[in-house]
Amino acid sequence: MTRVLALLLIFLPQRLKHVVARRLLGWEIHPTAYIGRSLVMVPRVTMEEGAQIGHLNVIRDFDELRMAKGASIASTGCPGGGRGGSRNWIVGVPSSSGIYSDPRRDPSLVMGEYAVITTAHDLDVTDRIELGKQAAIAGFRSAILTHNLNLVTDRFGSSKVTLGDYGVLMSGCTLQSGTNVPARSIVSAGSVVATKLNAELTLYRGNPAEPVRELPERLKFFHREGRQAQIEAEVRRWMEKS
Image (cartoon, rainbow, N blue to C red; front, side, top):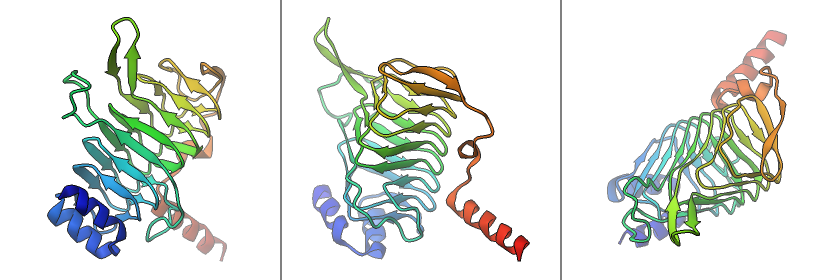
């Protein structure tokens, strides 16, 4: 029945999507949240004010999707939600599966305020993936892996991956299981993060990714505001000039 409702949700108009999601699936969906024509098969979903899921995403087979205020999965960021095809593949292994026996495993995707996942990324939610406030998986075709194979014991394992506040992952990057990107840091396009990175305000590059240079704290990206606050700031500047 849940599978049928998830398929039905793809085609329903927005208002009916909210009714089905809240009353039949038990999701917590803010009235201003937007769900595009995407397949979402996750038992626990929370979408706060202004959170958005664009079109043509596959989001399934993990325990929880949690999107804070303004968080976005492949959306244009415009009121009313995304319109373009985005092709994100966000798939995991639910905790009910017998493949992974570790009781500490937390197959969930947690997105902080105004965190962004853009286009054509592959996210393995075998364990927790957490994006901090304003963090961005930018560009396209990056991969985040939370599972691994221990070649000594020939057993699967998993570890969470974290992208800190205002952290940025550029196009074509890979984050391996158990790694992290510090707050206010950037991983250059095509890099592979194979270990835990530590220094904030740093540009990382390479395979494996290593610190290249420090970043100035004044970068505007590290001080960006949510979309609504940005709009209000633009209006204020326009009025001051008038």
